[in-house]
Amino acid sequence: MKKYILTIITVIFFILPFQSYSQGAPPPPGQHGQSGNQAAGNAPIGSGLILLLGFGIAYGGKKVYNIKKKGLEN
Image (tube, rainbow, N blue to C red; front, side, top):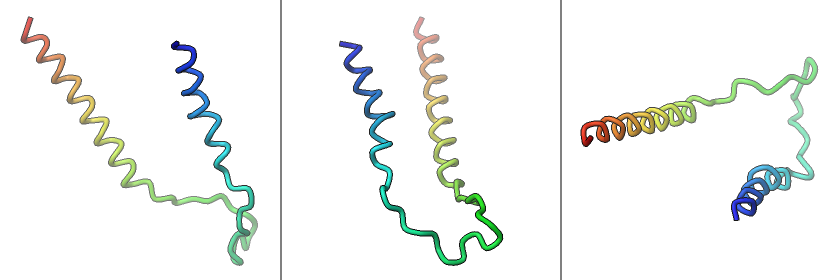
């Protein structure tokens, strides 16, 4: 049974995303790459990074709380 679940998870997370790529992307804007094609940069990642760090801290705090609570019960 675990093999089937692992297979399903593999298909969902590794194979299906490749099926969702666009087949015909529109051309870039007219002023794209005036001095040659350049890599995209300066993507705004601030809010996503803050959320990720916040959830990580909350998860770590919960784990520490559970460990301390379990230690007090013994």
